[in-house]
Image (tube, rainbow over all chains, first blue to last red):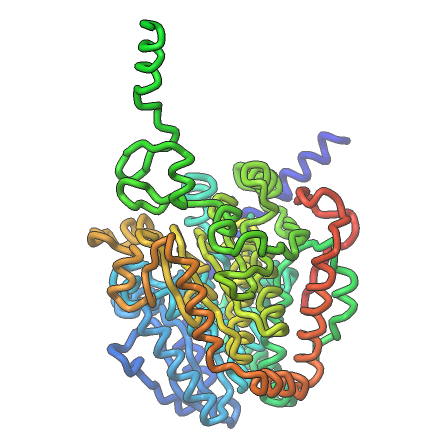
Length: 297
Length: 333
């Protein structure tokens, strides 16, 4: 009996590892719909707005204004591209400080004109280059998060592919974070994690399982609000159907957020992130927990 | 007589150095190095120091009162690589004598009352997980409520991988905390010390009102090795150093360890210079008018501060095992 149980446990573990890695591969699939595809399907009359107004335009982050379900919105997202030429042009979705500063500029514009903000997250991470570092990559990411924390307009982020580390989070400090079924979102890439903790990048599937980067796992951990279904086999099998589901989820999230006062939205967003994390505090937990009002809508 | 001479000779030989500078390889006696704040007497190299040593150097004598030492690490992902996460935490605790990678409390720096948070690189690379984020948040709430300044000494390899997405979320959490500080005009000074990379430099550390670093500190978002491997570009001389960052405009100053205390004191006095009792009262009134959320924040900070001063009663404080009862997990549904 014990033997059977341990075998079952091993098989379950093996299956979890395979499932996690499969999701990583689908999330990175070369045909997976990108930010521009979702813009094409969901946004009417999109007007792209370029440049950080300081020195450059970063094609790894695209942004602009358009109509979503009859209302004007700001859209900002990482753009990966599909063909090799496109991918190179967009730097594989790895943004530089210019990209994050462009996002900040556009967020200010949305706040000024009271437009809801929709972001799409799809990046392996921020670009790790010398010029990017020396151009202030760290501070650019930090400021983008702070900027998002300050907005009072509704903010909905959707993870559509790879949510790679701080470079992804910089566009996801939102009121509602949605995530497609086969997208991943993680503190570090499975390869990076394996290289550090297993001392060998070949253990990436093990790392992928351990990091729990899939949508259903993140929902359990409270890091996202909703898992958005994809067509069978992944979004790339039917981009239009995938986009329709995403659009529906965004519309529902916006409807919830519209009912709140601007300052209340900002305060609740702050609360959302304050609550994230798991710790024990034997000296204070119970008392303090009971002092916190339930802030869910 | 001859014997005495023998002994004198033996004593006059240079003693075996207890400390060897990692930079210039010169040897020195530990007491001398400690007296010099763990800065190499020969070349001025700033050695890494523990969080406790940092507090001794920075805070006025006996002014540091630790808060929230009882906040303990859990293993939400049941993360195991070559070693289980709880084992890694236990090892780090045994090695450093700390419960987590940050110690927090109130202190006086150069006579100036403030909230002080100090990270320790020796504890799992100073990595930021749920506990670090939570303790920083509490520091912020306390500083805002008590009109104290916040001083953070940052040293970290980045977000803690073993807590997965929850570690990443601490970047957002601490950035939201800075929003809280800014909103209430609470002064925030960050001291970046070697090494400070990844999720910490890309969140609260670089969002401070004044951001300084120690000489020679490595400051970058991606580590030099990752950059070299990804881009195959040679790294320029001095890449990521505090001095280079100062040149590029990413820091307010590079400050030697011996000057740090006076500098921070001066910054805090200046940042508080425009504050008057009337303005403080106006700020409080604004806070009161902000409805139940702002009030909940204030309420929580007070309760936490009060409880933190009570003696700790729940176990040894060294045990990272998840307790039997439900952990203090707060998850939005």
